[in-house]
Each structure stands twice: as C-alpha cells, then as structure tokens.
Image 1: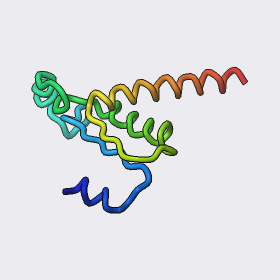
Image 2: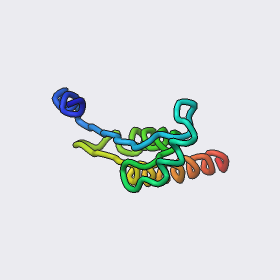
Image 3: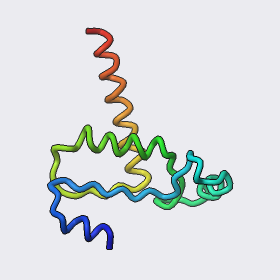
Image 4: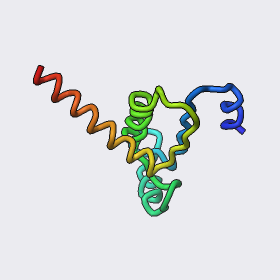
Length: 97
C-alpha cells in the first residue's frame, strides 16, 4: 500500500528499495545478523553502508532517468559497487588535476 501511495504522486523517477535485514547498526542485535546470513535471496542481510551507498548511487547515477525501478538486496549490492568505482575514479582524477 505504501508503494502504491508513492506511485500515485507521479514522480518522473521512482526507485523503491526493499532491503532484507539491515545489519551493521546499533538497532540490530548480533544474533539477528547471524540468523539473516542463513536466509537466502532478498530477505537476507544487507549492511547499512551498502544500503546507503546504493541510495547515493541511485541519485548520482540515475537521477536523470525516468520510470520505476525496484531494488532488492542483490541489486543494491551491485549498485553500491558501481558507486564505489565511480567515486574512486572521481577521487583519483581530482588528485591528478
């Protein structure tokens, strides 16, 4: 219902993130992290830093795109990796100038 409500607003670009168990923060007990590592697919663990990088990457790399995209754990991890390489390239280029 929440996603449908956001869709009705009519954004040009809508990225919906569906993380599994967010780990790496003070609010997730260690045993939940261990248990989540046993869960395969979109309901397993995702580190809070990967989630944050994937949101930043969506904004930086795809803000001019149109349409809707739904990102689950695997897609978020892939997007975060792309963002890491982009930010590293930017950092290296800025140091060379």
